[in-house]
Image 1 (tube, rainbow, N blue to C red):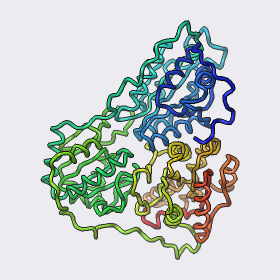
Image 2 (tube, rainbow, N blue to C red; image 1 turned 30 degrees about the vertical axis):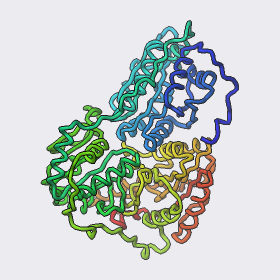
Image 3 (cartoon, rainbow, N blue to C red; image 1 turned 30 degrees about the horizontal axis):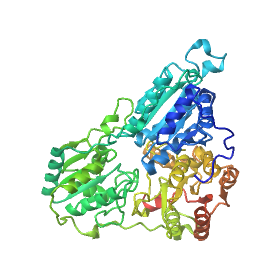
Image 4 (cartoon, helix red, strand yellow; image 1 turned 90 degrees about the vertical axis):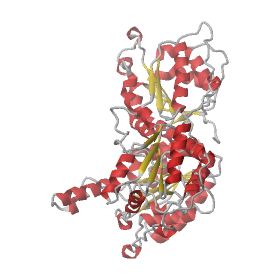
Length: 587
């Protein structure tokens, strides 16, 4: 990060005198560069120790304007690095604010260490009114069904052990958020002597586990026999070496590859073995591949059962043998249905999918020519119907102009809106695109963009988030944190002035009921007045101009914005897109 908090640190006291000092000391020894937070009295003791004992370093505080933003920043950071950040949440009220963002991070399987707090557990120590309404008997119950582990320790030593354990648990595959709730009285307890600080660095256990020899041999044998193998590449890591290994494995066996817009970049989109653009839902062309394959290997694919059902719905039911490699079942529970349906799998491999790829490459499998049809299968990108729209901007126009503006240097597409066509996504590196937010709500995009910008600072790769106007308006104050800490970031708003995804749903319902589809916009429009997104962004410290409405002005506006962001600025460009822009492209 370029700039320390402008408030600075007035004094650093090296003596460990309070319970929260010991907690801050442990956090200093963990690999946690930042702690995202909204200040709150329930962890005032820890706050003081982070500043006056730790010196606001390791972790450094990131001041946020909403608890959802604090969690979303940690989420975006983890999507780039694969590593957790710390988050501090004030009492039950802060946890309730943050709950949607925690659900996103849980569904997206990313690590983070969430530190909560409560008013005095001992009722005799509670102040009138405020401490009572900010204390819960079992605070972790609020998020227990969509977090990996939680605890509410009763002593300083127990809290130290709990935090060390939580840090280990969140990084183990499959990763997900963990939550430790600290009694305010515990934090403010004077220490008679320094407690034993757990040696977290001692734990060098692998964070993920590979397949056993029998699973590798069985999968390799199936690949050796297959004539038309198909890889479904889902939640995989950002390591460039693993990226290269996936390409090598597909080439060795002549396997075609399907990828998904819900996950980040995992395979080069222009490779001859990646014939179809990715989608949020299964496309007809990819359904045809599923129906034609004689072996399907799912590498932690999101919703395998639903994908196979969709292929059958397109008229291409799977007849292939199916291998599924994932550790995700470790997080499945009865409350959240993000475990999806039961898939008809012939071989289940409970392992890190990238480690299965490595093991298969290290085995003595044959190099096989592909028996799939040649690269003429590649689906071509749809052409926008721009002539009919005159100067109107379709989503494809925005994608094309942004691609041109970013062509000269590396960028990272942190987020894309629902209307972005898969054919408009060109990826050749694991950081070219980070995927969606896991829980598919609204309002997470701005915070995740800030977290990604934090992780990418100094990398030479510009973070770019293309957000819908609803997403920005719901979570937009998160970008103040990026401006405050001088993080280079480009936000492009694909502004259609609607909650347009639901417009499409209402049109379908009206058509099914033989009612007027022209009424579908009622209750959906974000107009009258039209929010001034440029003024909103400028009030938060971003650079922003007037809304771009004419297609001819788009290339210059984006080129200027990219140049400003690459120079270190936080920039927003508001682009008015046709509400039906993605429908015109068949998206």
